Image (cartoon, rainbow, N blue to C red):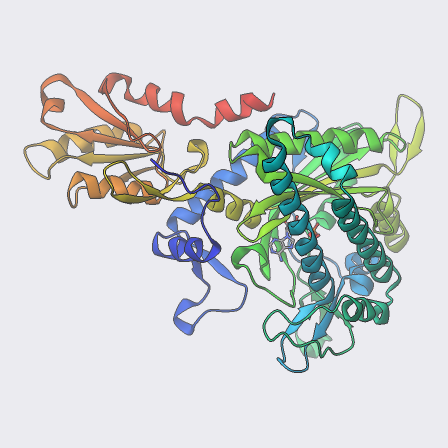
Amino acid sequence: MSNSPDGGTLKNIVSHCKEYGFIYPSSDIYDGLGATYDYGPNGSELKNNIKEYWWKAMVSMHSNIVGIDAAIFMHPTTWKASGHVDAFNDPLIDNKDSKKRYRADVLIEEYIAKIEGKISKEVTKAAKRFGDSFDEAQFVSTNPRVVGYKEKIQSIEYRMGQALETGDLSDLKLLIEELEIADPVSGSKNWTDVRQFNLMFSTEVGSLADGAEKIYLRPETAQGIFVNYLNVQKTSRLKTPFGIAQIGKAFRNEIIARQFIFRMREFEQMEMQFFVQPGTEMEWYEHWKEKRIKWHKSLGLGEEKYRFHDHVNLAHYANAASDIEFNFPMGFKEIEGIHSRTDFDLKAHEEHSGKKLQFFDQNTNESYVPYVVETSIGLDRMFLAIMSAAYEEEKLEDGSERTVLRIPPALAPNKVAILPLVNKDGLPEKAEEILNEIKFDFAYQYDVKDAIGRRYRRQDAIGTPYCVTIDHQTLEDNTVTIRERDSMKQERVSIDRLISTLHEKVDMKHLLKSLA
Ligand code: ATP
């Protein structure tokens, strides 16, 4: 068997997702709507399973973390306080020749990614040259060419960070010109000035006659947690350190929305805000970095596919921030952010609401505004990470090919397919009996059409980890075959043991236990 090590290319994944009911372009019959997608039957199952794995790991497994489900609409002052009205902007730049619009910071980041690519090439070359004695850490810290590249990256990052932080848009443009960054489509370097563009969608509540009020679709779920923090703390009788978690939609009017579900205008976030005593936040920041990377790696998509990117330039409210990056088909990109946000948000809400948001610590008889460490992961990006790692066009020993999705079994949309070998001789009836037993435990597919080999291929293509085949022997000795997706190996088991065998193989419990 030969494996394609890098998973699928984005183009193949997009068409596979559509063909097999994972993801469709939104409003497809009207030719779609930019950066908006609908999840199909298999997609929504996979998405629900990701949510469940996150929720159980974050909420169910922690006695000091509780969940909420806040509204998407919030009082408009929320977004004034959080800084989103004034500062939730992206710097956009247009190319005068191609008329294409870009995010200035993304153009620069792509330039940096190219330099990183050069470093990787140097490392690969050197590893070949030195063989077993190769010490990568030493090489990247001493090789003059690599050190030069790294210094260049640092100076670009620093300058971009400064320009973004101080809102110096002309310097951002100057940097693009100095680096001679060209439009990736046309190659032209004929750029407009950089302008700020607010990413929040707005709408109105109330009729115009009553004097309608402008409100926003939330651009992040976090603020729903901040404004509820005292309600939750009191009703759940929580003491610091404690967390509040939430899964929900967020909306951003992204300037450039490319790369499929990586950057959407309507997407879903899974966030947890952890409220701690001031002064202990760095400890908790490190704690959550470690916990979150462990959660990612537990899925077995490949440890080498993750890396941390610690922020050098911090937002004004943060005292530490790091992204977990995943190696998507288009390279390493942010999948989750871990931020130490200090007391910035709660203090701002105190100021704007005139309400005290302090926590009374009974141990010390002190009141304080807690500091917050947050973990914020994009559900859709997580979905894309799984799809891109799982997708494989595999050449088999007999020369044939199959497309298989090696989705972690606990997250697979269907855990098992029930397949009567033929559509007669009492086999479908027997299959139905089995189905009536397993449907309470597992998401399943039932398929009687076509030859068994083709049916296996269909299940491989949607990532079903186990196929149960009912044949004539089943009627005689009450056994079935279970075929495993990845190895394609088959074993015969008694129907009495079917449910427990499947539980052993696909239960999310095993994944969760590996986190403990
Ligand atoms: P980026 O720099 O890629 O725009 P961000 O730093 O603005 O992301 P955060 O505000 O930290 O992102 O949001 C937390 C998480 O939400 C991100 O790690 C990402 O997984 C997800 N996310 C953010 N924007 C989008 C989007 N437009 N589409 C899909 N997921 C998103």
